[in-house]
Amino acid sequence: MSEADSYQEDAIHATDLRKTFSDIVAVDSISFTVRRGEIFGFLGPNGAGKTTTARMLTGVMQPDGGSAAIFGHDIVHAPVRAKQRCGVVPETANAYTDISAWQNLMLMGELYGVPKHYAEERAKTLLTALGLIERKDQKVQGFSKGMKQRLILAMALLHKPELLFLDEPTSGLDVQSTHLITGMLRELNRNGTTIFLTTHNMEEANRLCDRVAIIQKGRIVTIDSPERLKMAIERLHTIEVSFDPARSADDLITFPGIESARREGDKLVITTEDVDSAIHAITTFGREHNLKIEMLRTLSPTLDEAFLRLTGADSA
Ligand SMILES: Nc1ncnc2c1ncn2[C@@H]1O[C@H](COP(=O)(O)OP(=O)(O)OP(=O)(O)O)[C@@H](O)[C@H]1O
Image (cartoon, rainbow, N blue to C red; front, top):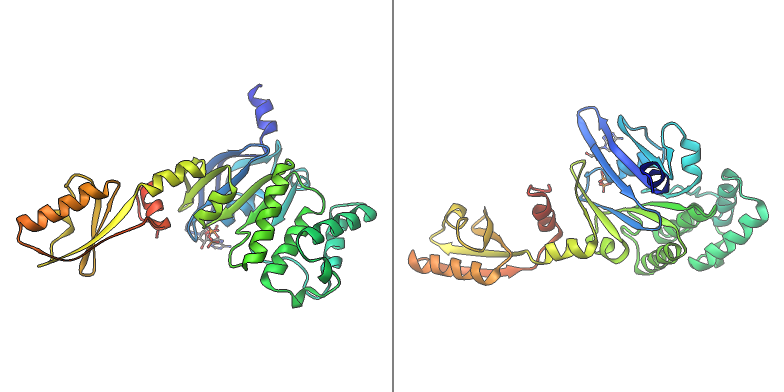
């Protein structure tokens, strides 16, 4: 396949995409490809640039630099063609609250030029699958957050998009809505829909995605399968120790097995991939310097530590 063909085949092809807000670089020249048929996750902490990237790709916001194409259609030069192939579930609810779920779906059908009888069929199927069919004639203003999110997903799917964008699709939702939404995403993907989702939840990315890009401070740090990212994270452990009298983190940093050490209040916080060697080094150090170990405990890795590990910098 030639390079031009592969560009056409990609669901998303972004090159040096950039967006700034006055002096904030929200998205810092990122490049990535989403292949047809995959579930691709954009994982990062708050403010990393996930929503801004999704907004540029879905034509809500113009990039300041770089380019991107959806199924080969440039998002700036051919925005209508690019948008027709996509469904979008934005970060904040975009359903009209003073009309019913059904009316919202029919409006969406008109917007995308879906023939009425087909829109009605499709709306029934989607509302049933997402547990809303009995509420279809009720006004959206009485819906819970989870119900609204399910409706928005149904609206995004009405015209059978080949590529679905979701911004934090299950953030803050009840268990039932989360379950229905993730089930629907898997089912869609099995039937060939490409999915791009943003999340700050490693577990969600792990459950759903074929590949994940980790984004931090507007830059892509790494792109890999969740399994491989998880393996990198699970190896990393934290040990907290406090000595009496207190010692500096610098005293421990050079010991075998210790990757990083910092002071937090009256304790030292150490990261390691080799818990046994690190504990051995800490206890030997204590004995040799006549220090009392007042507290020593190991903690499982957190998402923050994963970012720290993968980025080599503080994720805050
Ligand atoms: N319209 C805007 N005006 C000014 N700054 C903005 C605007 N939108 C985003 N930003 C800033 O750009 C940076 C990236 O924000 P963005 O919303 O893309 O991050 P995010 O990864 O989606 O975070 P969150 O999970 O909190 O939504 C942040 O520093 C944010 O404050």
